[in-house]
Amino acid sequence: MRPALVHHLIERTAARLPDKVAVRHLGRETTYGELLEESRRIKEFLLDAGVRTGDRIGILLEKSVEQLTAMFAVSMAGGVFVFINPILRQEQIDYIVRDCDIQLLVTTGALALKNRLERPGTLLYVDEGGFPCWPRIRDRFAAVSGTVRRIPDDTACLIYTSGSTGMPKGVVVPHRTVVEGAEIVSAYLGITENDRIVSVLPFNFDYGLNQATTSILHGATLVMHQFIFAKDLLNLLRDEVITGFAGMTPIWAKLFGGKHTLKAEMSFPGLRYITNTGGKVPRIVVERIRAFFPDTKVFLMYGLTEAFRSTFLPPEEIERRPDSIGRAIPNVEILVVNEKGEECAPGVPGELVHRGALITRGYWNDPEKTRQVFRRNPLLNGQDHLNETVVYSGDLVKKDEDGFLYFISRRDEMIKTSGYRVSPTEVEEILVEIPGVSNAVVFGRELESGDQGIIAVVETDSSDTRHLLAECRKRFPAYMVPHEIHCEPEFPKTANGKTDRSFLKSKWQGGMGV
Amino acid sequence: MSIEEQLTTYFRENFAADVDGDTALIESGLIDSMGVMELVEYLERSFGIEMDMDDMTVDRFGTITAIKQLITEKQEAM
Image (tube, rainbow over all chains, first blue to last red; front, side, top):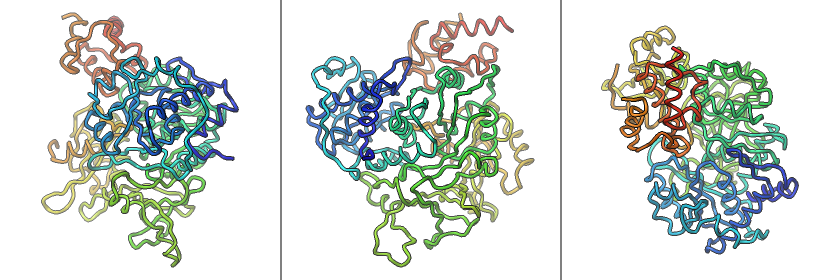
């Protein structure tokens, strides 16, 4: 039978390849057999600690193999795992712990101290930093195989995702979505047990988690890495003979956009594929990626946590359609729908709607927002009594004649200026072509006239906004030239490593500068 | 002020942290990737040196002693 629950992934692969290295981190190796054994012991601890079916168990850890053993243990014990990124501020961590009523938290002494954790009452320390301390008590728990009975529709995890406003929301993800997500993505990336996949993205981000599950599903090796400097990452890609690497826009900005350039020649003969997700990469950055990694296939991907993964652009199409986010992944259909709920003709902008595999259940504690996003399929041919939930993404896209999709903007972010509708993405795309600009965030602000102004924040070492405006005038039609430009030496990131757009927006929303 | 003193002052003022020559700056999580880029800018400005990507690794920025070594090498090469 196919795997149906999250812990089936490790059970099956450990049975087949017990001595294969599952995870490498800072030179330490863990085999599939060891990963399974440790997960089973922690599962016994969780059951002994009184964890009941459906309890939320937090995992607040830096990148480490313990994140994965804890995840599988929670799945085996019938719990719901909640990855919490340690770079979050204390209030954000407290919020998540309270919001989903975390019963037990797996962490380290340093993180518990730094965040003055008082809730939940029960902790498990994976280091010597507190009690119960896993290294000292692990021998008390046998690595037995029994698990709590669950079905694929049961909730496997909550993924907290930051919206444009307010505190993060917990997306409720069933086992089915995690497991099918691993099968679907690994099918189109062609992942096998020969792959060595570098894990830079955090596991509290759907695609970061998906990298781990695809790797474990196929018995590949996951090499964990904390991204700080571009050069360390490039050395790792070469020295560890990495075959698969997933990046996001801020990572590309650091590799190719800044004033610090690479002097040494490097080549990566082992690197089979690169993926990008978490926002459109500007065309010029795609070109730089392809020039730097000439022998590597580049997959541009699009997904939203509520539907896990949605589209990818096959590498052979990148030349012809470098701006496309591709087509639906296997077992998924992507509709482009207008405000009346009808399908849009090619070239006509509409909202991206995801149907099929990988739909999650909704937001924890938030029925209203769930009803807005998780809606009935609008195209049921008059059979409206039939139940089929689809996800409305809030993203405006259009399709070309061949069905390839193009991202336009978030639906609520289109800027109306001088009678034109301007896509922030389009302005950002052109801004990063200006030498010295590595990243850009564009948004609109209401002017007293009732019109909207175009506000641009650019990541650059320069502060010469006059020069930047002159560059804009050369490149943009008059109505697209930003009304204000602000410079930032380095953009702040969200916990998932994305550019923190809402922070930059609120910082510069008031207006100042040019 | 010696290079070492300048750096410890920088960390006290910007990170409210008392560090010595061997304190792990990155592995301990004291500075993250954004903090590190600010540090790079500070070094370039204050010591009149220019970094390239090949200089910027966790090994070379891991401790004050390592950073001091990097600054000295850069200044000598100029």
